[in-house]
Image (cartoon, rainbow, N blue to C red; front, top):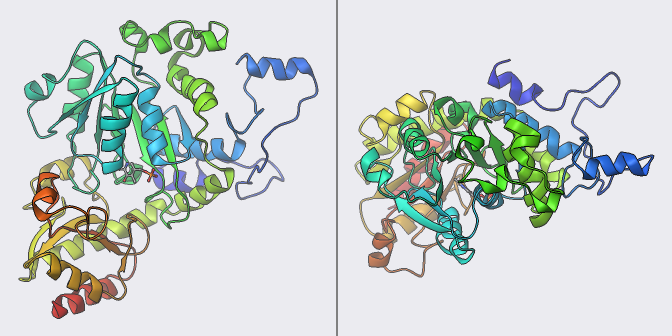
Length: 423
Ligand SMILES: *Cc1c(COP(=O)(O)O)cnc(C)c1O
């Protein structure tokens, strides 16, 4: 089946007489007839449900759908995108290890890696993803365990050269982990370009309606952990917390996914609520239709803004003069997503006047859902910083982040036009 069909029919498939829509299994626990039945589950000898912190049928069906959409062998839902990125990394890293990460990533992930992981003893080196392979390779150390980047970065809209990153990771014997939140598997499937593990903040386009905060980790099953066993003792040597079981020996290609669930989720417990998984699944059913509209609307908005003399600059990889246009065409010929950034001629106050004049388009911290929205980091998320400090943080004081929704394009353009007339 094509990915569009999988958005609707992937994951849950009802048997004869069962509910057509995915049921919400709102239950913490599951009943068994005998002690032995339950014991086999705890020994990981049989698959089955016993406690929702580990697995829940609603969550698993949605995870399965996302795995199918990405072309992976398995997936696990988490309570947020932050949890997904943390779990994806922590599953193969421990104190004393090191990771290499593109500096074009979401601010929350940047903090997670540069501050919180450091406190756990995991060191991080940030690299410029546009640098050459030789330059990026210099960041690797003997204890480096992975390379990480975002397909399309939030908020910078920078496009990752996935094949280049995969080559660098694999030549150092480590997996490439890609946060594929912005393009979604509708526009890019990083496994097809050599990525090994994919993460998502499902809070964004996958949900698409701003109803739940969630995340997901997907494994391609392609990375050969055993060939680099000395680097990944957590997967390739016995786990004391599971009676000395070795994940790669017991589960083969599913080693990474099994450890993620059986060890990390068991111990850290950032599960998605089944109710949220249900809402996410509803969003996924229309993902293919929505992404097309997000991209076609955003392309028209970017073209409109770049031709308006009151606009100083527009950053959207779908514009031919964008520095990442070629990369976007190569990896995402159907479009990147609905998010772009722009600056107006003027100063901070001009941006504020423009935003306050918008009527249809709302001011929110969120991005990537059905409603067009804007954010001015200098007045909102980064308002304590001076213009100078903002520039040091890589954020232009005039930068407005615009997330183009799926309303009628004429209404979006009309609103932008009337707000520009007010500045
Ligand atoms: C929003 C976002 C996250 C964090 O996800 P939450 O669901 O808010 O925890 C991670 N990565 C990217 C690219 C994001 O846009």
